[in-house]
Image 1 (cartoon, each protein chain N blue to C red):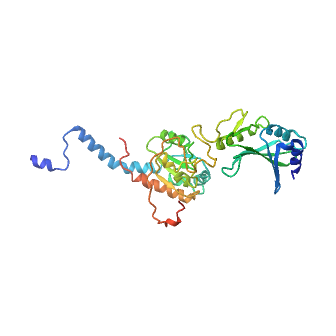
Image 2: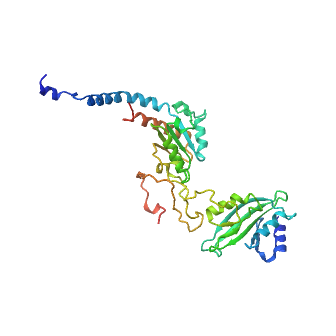
Length: 178
Length: 174
């Protein structure tokens, strides 16, 4: 449905579009980080595309599965044309930065803060890049795959709580523990 | 009365302080059941509602299940006016200081009910964000399990708290 977006992108930007895919009606373009701002501007302003609604910005952590490690994902929608597209930007672990699209879509502001908070992608040019969901005392970014799954960072000193033994006996092989 | 008989008699009061202490004990012993009875039927709840269990809390409070029947009628939205803290929903680490502060602002005597599994144990949220039970932050009197608990369970929990209040000793201040 939104093949036109991919075609126009490839015609205009050529090599900056690294890959495109169109599975089950979900058009996706993987683009270079250096030209992201330029591409975003084109997606918003082109009269045939008019992608005016920033639906979401998030990231994927391909820890030990792919290089580069991160992908920043933008979901865009056009209220006039009724089509949508996902734009992906590969970002390396050594330099986890990405240009901010807040100057283009103001609605990206909090989405990018959330992505910074949980994945640690630093958006250059963002007007107010600080944590949005977690507290400032939190160390690290919990949705990264190398964040320990049971690590907690309490703000108050926790009380010791007595464990109450259960009456039901659980066979050891049923316990889902290593 | 001979000196020997005096020593064996039940009440020997020799000092004023002892007499006052004995009198206070007797007043407490006699008034405690009455005071407990009045406390357990005039619980003023402070709803600390953070998650979906809040819908069930509203259901318990509304006419169909009618918490007011058991003397816990009026939700007060100021901790100063409340003596029962309902922790309704997941407590995250970001919220734990707020919860503790609300608890500390309540005047004694005060009681706490953990409403639902998240408030009781953290529920299935075993991750970076969630406190594994509100009792890691403040003491809890009654735990009501369920995700969310049925209103009947909540009423049962409230009755258990009332039994607990009736059985309390040594909390009268004269």
